[in-house]
Amino acid sequence: MKRLDANQLLALSTGLALIVLVLAAAINAPEGKPLRYPVLGVVCSVAYVVLSAFWTRRTGVRRPPMIHPDTPGAAVWSSLFPLGILIAAAVPFLFPGLDFGLLVIIGAIFFGVTMESAIKVARMGGR
Image 1 (tube, rainbow, N blue to C red):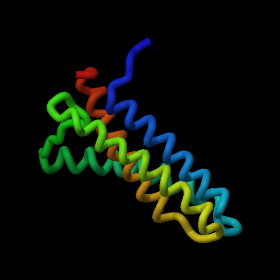
Image 2: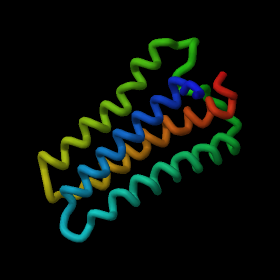
Image 3: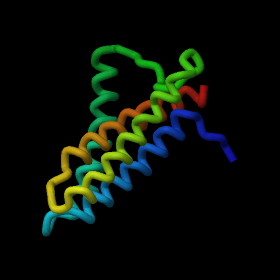
């Protein structure tokens, strides 16, 4: 079995946290809007990755993956992405019946950032 890189594990944990947030938002959604949040999460995540790749090609700016050996402390700071999404997943249970679209969009962008980093590592051949 192939080992996962730290960036890929970060993307996996952020994706699982986003799933928890989407489920919490869908459970506590206003009447008739529970399907809105899964669609919003998928569309925003995919749009971020695609538009970021387009923008990178257009501007020529190359950023390294989020976690790399030159900065070992980045792994600790990067763990704030899934932690923040999991904390946001508690909000729908505290205030049920409100619209949580913005929380899902923010979580989807966090996931897009980590997914972009994992894709960079996969293209580099795992370093």
